Image 1 (cartoon, each protein chain N blue to C red):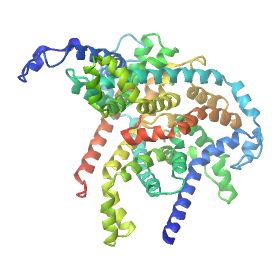
Image 2: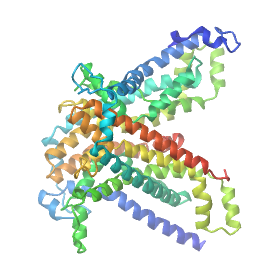
Image 3: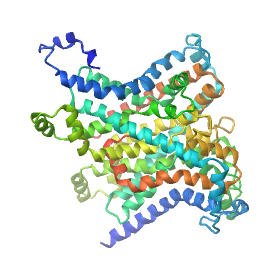
Image 4: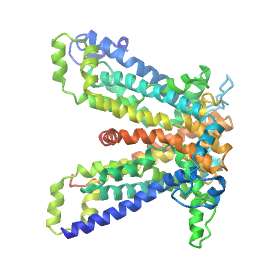
Length: 310
Length: 273
């Protein structure tokens, strides 16, 4: 990396160009950076650039020729009902997961915030699903939701005939949403707990003395003060949903009739099942811009309404 | 005084109810794994009523779980080792050394962290295929030897170590490489522990990449093997749950032993891998 030093670059700042970096320092930096940069360069940075090109081709993944077709994949995408279905499914999924993640994470964090016997125990229990693999979690949920599985057996016990959860597109999407929230609740709770513990205690005591009750303090102080963390939790939830694959692959396989075919699933199917790498990459790119766009909008929204308390 | 007792009982009640919901799938998995096949369809008890431990042996006989386990361990060891070495070297350069284009380079890496894996997975797959690395350990490990999350985590930690220590060592004639190994590494063991746990959990639970680059049972990792097992023996719930449980145990053990380091890592970085 040290060889990339161009002497002319620093001379504009008025300092002596060659003295700015010591030789030993540059050599060490190059040596230390090289291994990681080679791996990241070859397997992360290069693929990003390469993906941009592949999305403009009709490449099938095997042929040595990548035929350039311009923006045809993107045009095709805009007219593909399967893609629009997938986008709609992903958006509904993302909204559901975001709302429930914020709510569940905040509630658990608030309950754990004040000193309480067994806090470590609860924290461990709530975090358990997060360290479990998506495959294992989805397998267990899938069989609990089976028509003759745990959920319907319990329902039958109280005289309710349970539906076939994973064969109805909306119920399946609901189950996927709950599974995702269940898996991340401990993670979100720890994030909120960290933010809660950094809040200024004095302000809350003053408000309490002035007669603000718990609900008022929560509504007008805690929630606004936690806005930066809420932004982070929501962005994490959105990224999780727009990248979702493992859970869906095992729980429903994208079915029934595309009811849970999120963007990750349709990308996988197009690229690796139908050998349409160009089209699959185009879907991945649209996903990328959606994630960036949604993050930006969310960031603006959370930034502009920032509390004056902070 | 009395009011706070009431609130804390209420908090316990809500937290316990939530815990029950969270734990229920695990308990059901354990109970089902010990039932006979007939019971899996008729018995909805949450707690075990029969103890067919032989289900575990049957599951491990029916599919090469031992091989899957070994493959996952080899892959995890490679990835954890790679992260600890490569990420640490790069993190030190970013934290302490001065070199041209340092900030630009760091921003590029941060940007790469935001890119969904789907964008890179197709070209990375064809690259690995062109190297002839499909169905090899190299294909599973090499592309993930370094990661940006670890570089950020360690860089943050290195930056918090007082620079005076380094200055003193330099005056005593220690080289930068010597400083890294004799001062930075020994002082940063907690950060290394956190990174090792994150990397292990990532590697053990990873699904999409191993799914793409492995085709045979000889190289399949535990998660892929489990998913295939579910496809083949999907109706034998007891064996399936026995297999699922054995695949889950390593992450749970790692989590229980290193819970503090893990929570500290999340709290410190506010980042998820």
